[in-house]
Image 1 (cartoon, helix red, strand yellow):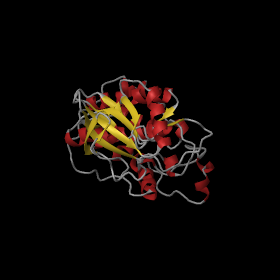
Image 2 (spheres, rainbow, N blue to C red; image 1 turned 135 degrees about the vertical axis):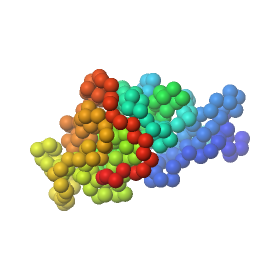
Image 3 (cartoon, helix red, strand yellow; image 1 turned 180 degrees about the vertical axis):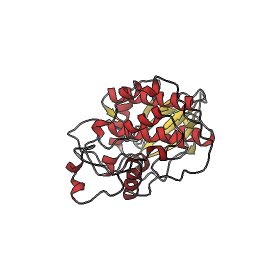
Image 4 (cartoon, rainbow, N blue to C red; image 1 turned 45 degrees about the vertical axis):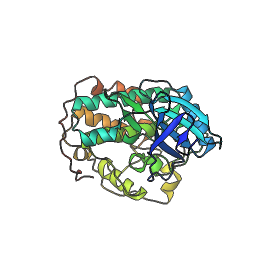
Amino acid sequence: MDENSIGDYQLGDSLTSNDNLYSDCEVFEARHRTTQKQVIIKLARDVDNANREMEILNVLSHEFIVKLLESFQTENLRNVMVFERYPRDLQDVYTTESLESNRIQKFMRQLITGLEYIHGKNIIHRDIKPENILVDGNDTLKIGDFGLSRYADSNVIMTPEIITLWYRPIEVLLECSNHTTAVDIWSAGCVFAELYRRYPLFKGESQINMLNKIIKVLGKPTTEEWPTMNDLPIMQSIELDGSNLKRYEDAIPNVSEMSIDLIKNMIKYDPEQRFSASQILQSDYFQNEDTSERNRSRDPPDFP
């Protein structure tokens, strides 16, 4: 068997991102040699991480979650996962097309419905971002890449170096090690805003730069809105600075009031006060037609 094949699959182009410093896998397009079915092959380097991801994927079965077709181990003990292949991800969609508000609403309903199911299984995805949200030809969305996912457990210390920087919630940036499903809600709120902006909401270059950008939009955090903020050990050695002014509307202009209200309830400083996935689906935004203006601009926003 040649080096460009694994099991019954012929490997194609590599999809591995060199930008992801925490990736422990290689990803390839592939084709089944008998059926010619196109798939995605994920080769995991770390056995424990691969087993954890497969364990989680095997308990998930939902219309808005990518399907694990099969998994096996190669002769040299590499763990292989085979997934359905989708033509685009959500970033591809919004960068090439100007999205109407009802289409954004459809994408968000599917994303949050998928998260409601995942969270109902006591699982945290921990890497929600447009590149991990796959889209088929009918605009059906699939949440993918569960490589960083974990079961929610208050007794397990989790590393802060998870969740792609631009979608990393404030408590994780401040090195909180007790992650809850609220981290996914923050990330999904960032995705929501990004679909309107056609550009990431917090495109920070470092942890400090991210904090500064967040404070520009949400205002300087206070213990009134985040009572447990000073319980984080790092808060004994740093001081968050900035204006108290909240500028959601400046960061996400020309969108409806109910859209802004929902984003505010998803991107909140206090994780315990963020809406749950179920609360989001019951919000006014999903009970009414969205009247937000269509954003046709391809220019990066000026703020934050």
